[in-house]
Image 1 (spheres, rainbow, N blue to C red):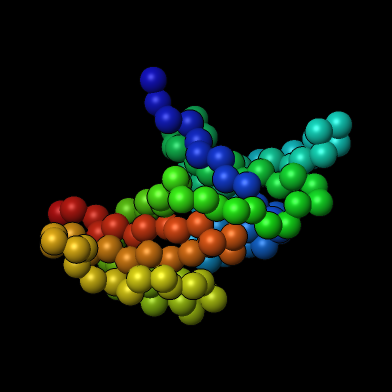
Image 2: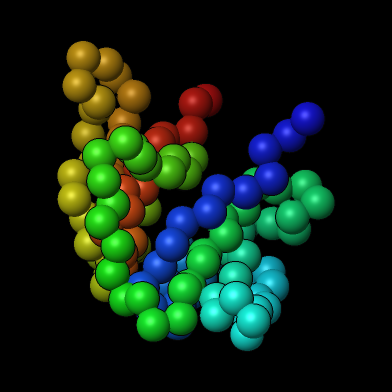
Length: 128
């Protein structure tokens, strides 16, 4: 078994694709409209789906906002240097919701950013 993808609903597909590809550096792997269901799916990730877990962006036509609720926590991305990643993301227009620094009650360096729909993404320092 392996984890294939995580699906999140987005209010503006082009804005979300721009964020995940241009701000975070993922690739748009595939995209398809489903006219009968009135939705579009776009898959983004750092590598091919056959080898990597990816994110499925689901755009339901005509729906531009969602209540994120309080059950979902965050996505997590490992980066080489959290401080540099935060600077790079900020320079590309990304929103930083928690600056880089040690996690609460620990030493691992983390930061949090928000995607355009408000989903939290944790940046975690690579273990050496």
